[in-house]
Image 1 (tube, rainbow, N blue to C red):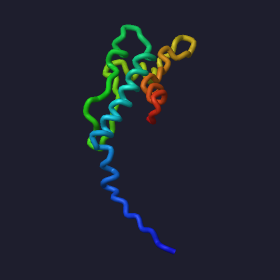
Image 2 (tube, rainbow, N blue to C red; image 1 turned 30 degrees about the vertical axis):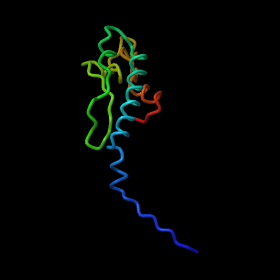
Image 3 (cartoon, helix red, strand yellow; image 1 turned 90 degrees about the horizontal axis):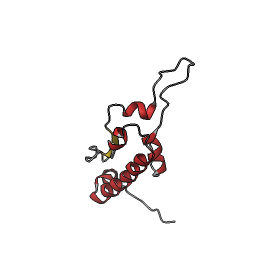
Image 4 (tube, helix red, strand yellow; image 1 turned 120 degrees about the vertical axis):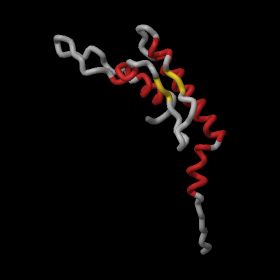
Length: 108
């Protein structure tokens, strides 16, 4: 029986995410996330929806992000603990970005 030896270049594999073609593909995928998020975002003034965007520069490890820069984005995404006089939450979570990532085939 012949032994087969495989040597993996783990540094090269880890660096693949930084390749321009991979980064371009990730940018396209994040663009889809933005599209879904903007289509499904709740709208009162429109500020939250208008501030959903792909962060232009990836992290040093190649990670790409979609962000919503409105001051109240965290409350739209995760809701608040504020309740009405009946104990019902006033601002329920919407999970716009998380749901958009799921819909676009991502993982969060």
